[in-house]
Image (tube, rainbow, N blue to C red; front, side, top):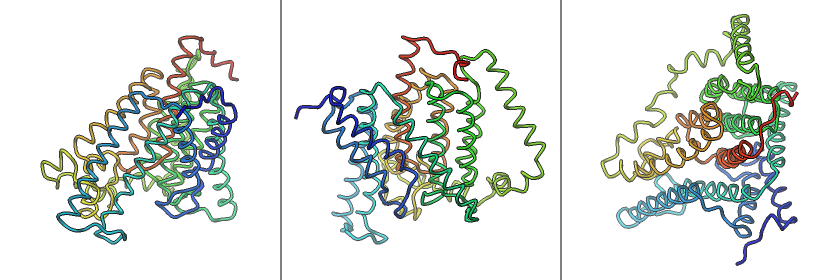
Length: 401
């Protein structure tokens, strides 16, 4: 089948941009139950399908590494399916406690995110303008802001604000991804410095409303590295003034802040029962035998031992797919970190990669498609940033004001 050149096919390119815009724009709108496919997932799947059948796939290190990881996960999953069928006779189509089929859901989510990531990387590789995705992220954040204002004015603001997501942790993870994207928009000169700061503060405020410790703690730490303006004469002074202003306001309103739920929740972070390593499932890995530690014990065995998934992206992968699967996945992340570092330096790695990696220490986010959207966009923007530096001098920061 002959591939269609998106550069020459204006109609198809426009259709794909519209679908992608609404896929990102509607991402915070969860109309169906937790674990179900939402509207944005359908739209993004349609986008990915059209890209894959009509466009040349970008075959790079990300494609081969992600494909290798997906193939390995498939082998491990099929092995345990075969084992349950032949040794335990436990293959059931209904989703009872001992069913094996229902644990294929994890592999389906991973496959979906692989297709989405590769499609985005391939599509963006042929793009000269990026405005559509930028406006999609802006509109998605406006949905959350409008939801918050509506619930605040009507007195329906929950103790842990989920916006239109199914639970607050999903909004917390979305804030993590949005934080990284906004920083990237600034570094690639889509928005000025003052707008980046305002946007990041709003995003952090959203995460604080969720009371998701993994979200707002990670964002606070990363904000310290993100407040420095680039290509501006007085960047260090601005950075120092910002930090001192935050400290001054914290001290000035300490009594009021100390009465807030978020302050008490943060202080009790290590005393809460759900913060222990055992509750979050970190210790399940150490119950595996030597072969399982190397090749993985499979997802079903985790649920049989721990009753629910491990609340860590890295430990979930390590336990499910063993040291081999963990190393393959880690290589994908290392490639990402190196590319971001090459483009944006150490501060770029902290503001782009660190939020989601820190969040992944205490939550399993491998299914969350917004992370993979941010992952693909950050790779594309890092390449564009290198082109900017090589072929055109960056504009002076003062031109933004």
